[in-house]
Amino acid sequence: MVVIAADGKYRLKIVLYGPSLSGKTEMLKTLKRMFTGVKSKLYSIQETNGRTLFFDYLVMRPGTNVNFVFDLYTVPGQKRHSRQRRVILNGADGIIFVADSAPIALYENAKTFNELRFYLSGILDKIPLIIAINKRDLPDALPIRIILNSLKITKPTPVFPTIATTGKGVKELFRETFKLTMLASFFPTLYKRELLRTIEAYKTLLPEGVTKEPLIKF
Image (cartoon, rainbow, N blue to C red; front, side, top):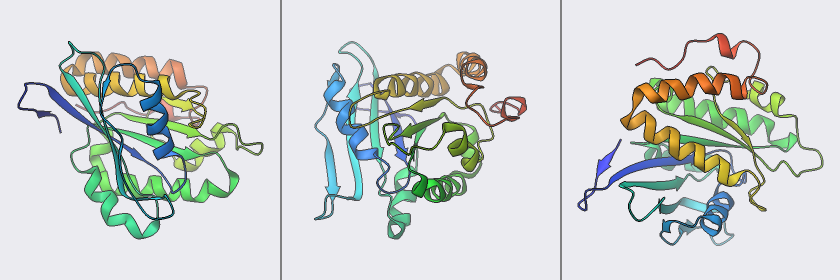
């Protein structure tokens, strides 16, 4: 849900969702290091072992003369924090699902994505969803198509292979996320055009048949 701040700027909320240890926090750390625009410090509420307890939070503005501000949140991935995840999702304008490429994480990827789909229900079909397939540097990383098939993606969706620790694919991931979230919130006609472009750009990665499904309904 877009919020107009006291300074007149439009604030859009983007949530990084995914299983525990998939690299959500590391992705925000890397983005903060790479991003050259206006940004806040990275706020983290963590357990003593360094794992996210409630959320990570980072504010980014692409430029000094830009009226859009992006509030970035991560969710804790551990099973016992399901209530916190649902709270953090409230009012999201865009979602980045961070999947883990490790074979052992295949089940948790699918389970966490099903949880996301359940929590957002029909809303997930009305806001941008971007998939980050993280940890592509693992020697036993699963093929991207296998991971996407396990998620049962039902609409054309941008997919970015990433390595959060090195920054590979991170800048491109957030550039697309910022653009789609802004367009969906303020320029729905342009957003629909971008979805048509998505079909061509990502159809080789998406499960067979997805590109025949209807696009987001307005």
